[in-house]
Image 1 (cartoon, rainbow, N blue to C red):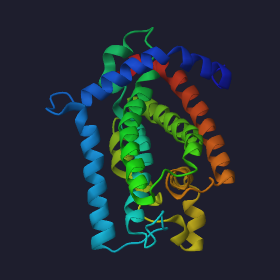
Image 2 (image 1 turned 45 degrees about the vertical axis):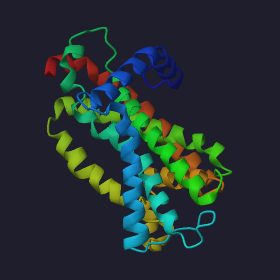
Image 3 (image 1 turned 30 degrees about the vertical axis):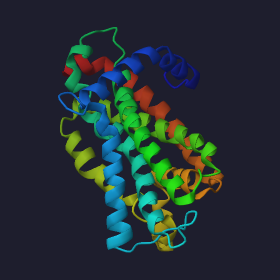
Image 4 (image 1 turned 180 degrees about the horizontal axis):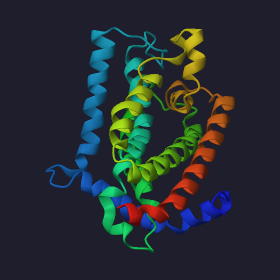
Length: 273
């Protein structure tokens, strides 16, 4: 029953109201005590985009694929890096906080009827909200560079199922294991995510990696997600349908397995905590 995709989808749909409520709570908690509050969601990506443009386009004189009238690829490099970081924000925000999400909410663990599976999803939702604001900044930068929006921007939503399903599945896995292994946060955030960050083509195009290593990097599902996001949002070209279809299937499988693992193991949370 736990490995039934239809049952999982129906159960998660029934929790949509609770998901929205906890996502709002998490977004508010991130800005609690801040003078500017949610305004930081706009200021931070603007400042970071300015920093990336200065460091990569001016200091390093780095180049990427030309975008619009930027034939030298100067601004394109900053936008390409920023696009990769927007995708990574959702993934790392969901998986990186998962190891302690259950331990930090023991009051909900003691409530038998509370659906604990919504807690990791709320973290992903909050990270997606911040990434969404950054995406608006990215689109504005692309318009300034190109003079118009990418003609394939409407295909960008097709990248999101792979990103969210992969993140949700891994977050459920990590959240469950984090209850039993208290050192998991250091392993995930301090090691695994750091390694995966540099194994994801965020600061470099995948095509520039030597062939023997390129095939290894392509095993990282985030590589395909980042690449197809750039294609649709910035470059105005069709997604790599083969890689996008494969990573979407992988993400959905990881999500189903992560959900089943979480639902099975959460019965023991109260005994361990």
